Length: 325
Ligand code: MRU
Image (cartoon, rainbow, N blue to C red; front, side):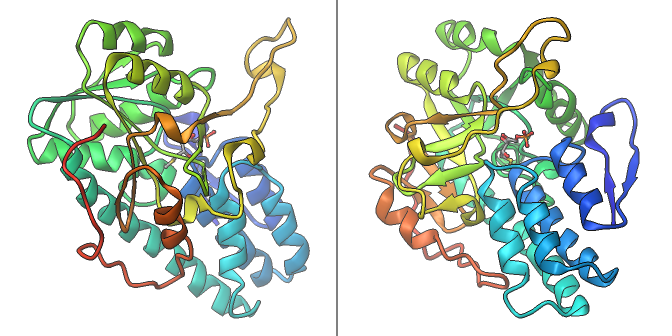
């Protein structure tokens, strides 16, 4: 299994070869591959790889699921890929189908999200939610790119996303490749940008959405939501049904990954949570492939849960609303 090693971007495009489930689990753990939907796809492909090289599939699946705790997609995809059994060719076909489904979900989410922008929108986004993170054209970034292509977005502000710079390294690189000029800001600049009236929307992805709409995403998202509320900006979460976890009642139950101190400081002890939880009350809209949800989120989220491999995506059937509160 060959993947683009995201740690080397944007300086170099380096391929990483994985020959067994442990290689894939390690690639997920060290963020060579990262972003919720894409670690689900990598996990599913890791299971198929394990079966094809004769590894124990149960052991491979638990190794892969244990690689990172917060993104709902990983455990979901590792479970989904085995739904019809562990025969190697079947697993490989289902892993590819899971990937194809994520591509479709991204396109559907972008179509739905269009209704949330108006001409002249200026968007702040956080972390990386584009092709690198999804295998498709993106969740939040896909929505931003689509809105830009439709003439609705004039400016994209990219949080650098401390400490590993998924924004400054990966989102800026993806936007450059899409031909969209962006402005990178340090995370701490976002409130001042909003206070100056230079942004209209915050659009982010998600790693896990609890039944009540509380949403785990890259550390710093919660602060953006607080600031967006203070300054009257729309705060939008764009995420596929594979990120929705209705078995987790509220954000209090979400396990937030804590990463090594040395990602922040080689000298001092550091507190390094990879994610935070934004309360549903700060979220103006949640966009899934099935449409735009508004508070209260629970009934809508319960109906989008249950995404299945090969499910029909009915872009037209779901309600959308024109403005973000
Ligand atoms: O630690 P990462 O880089 O895997 O974190 C990724 C994020 O927080 C993304 O915003 C999230 O996965 C949504 S990706 C479509």
